[in-house]
Image 1 (cartoon, rainbow, N blue to C red):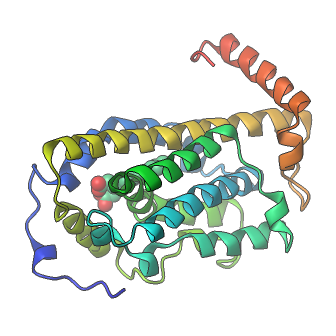
Image 2 (image 1 turned 180 degrees about the horizontal axis):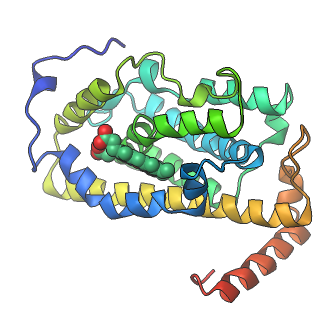
Length: 272
Ligand code: HEM
C-alpha cells in the first residue's frame, strides 16, 4: 500500500482526537514500560545476546498473533484505516532474525514465557470478538517500534557488536523512509476512525492493557534470564536459550516458580 498524505490525513490534530487521547491515556504506562529491567538494560547499552534472542522469540509470537488478526480484519471499518502491512509487518523480519541467531531449525527453538502466551492469546481473542480493539495494540507496538524502537535498534547493534544489519531486520522499516512523517499519517488515520463514546473508552482501556501486556512480558523474560543465568541453563553460544520443552517441563516450571516467588518476596517488589 502506498502511503501518500491525503487531505483527510493532513487534518490538524486536536486534544479530542484519538491519537492524542491514546497518548495521554498510556503516558504513565509508557514510563513504566521504559523502566522495566529489560528496557533499562537497553537504555544503559547493556543488552546481552541471550536477552535479545529471548526477546525476539516473544516478539515473534506477539506479531504473529497481531498480524494474523489484522490481516483477517483488514476490511473492518476501524482496522482498514490503520492497516499498513507493506510498511509495518514484522513477522518476516523476525523470521529472518531468528534464523540468523538460531540457525535453520529456529522454529524448534522458540521459547516464550507465560506472559507472552497470554498477550498473544488476548490478541487472537479480540481479533475474533472485537477487531476494533486491534487498533490499540497496533498503535502500541508499531508506533513504539517507529519511536524509541529505532534507538533500541542502534543500541542493539552496538551492544552486541553486530557488524552489519544481520539479526537486526526487526528494527528496519524499508517501506517507511521517514518514521516521523509516517507516524503523522498513522495518527490522522486513527483520528478518522468513527467511534461512539463507549467504543472510544473501550479502545483507550485496551491500549493501557496492551502496554501492561508488554510490561508483563518484559518482566517474565527478565525472570527467565535471571534464573537461567544463575543456573547456567542459558549460555551465549548457538545452543543458548532453554528449549520450550525444558521451560515448560513441570519440574522446571515448579523450580522457576519457587525461585521467582522467593526472590520476589525477598525483594519486596510485588505479589507474584
Ligand atoms: C527503552 C524503552 C523506550 C524508550 C527509550 C522509548 C522512547 C520513546 C520516545 C522518545 C517516544 C516519542 C517519540 C516521538 O514523540 O516522536 C516514544 C513514543 C512511543 N513509544 Fe516508546 N520508548 C520505549 C519503550 C516503549 C515500549 C516498551 C512501548 C510499548 C510496547 C512503547 C510505545 C511507544 C508508543 C506507542 C509511542 C508513540 C506515542 C505517540 O506518539 O502517541 N515505547 N517512545
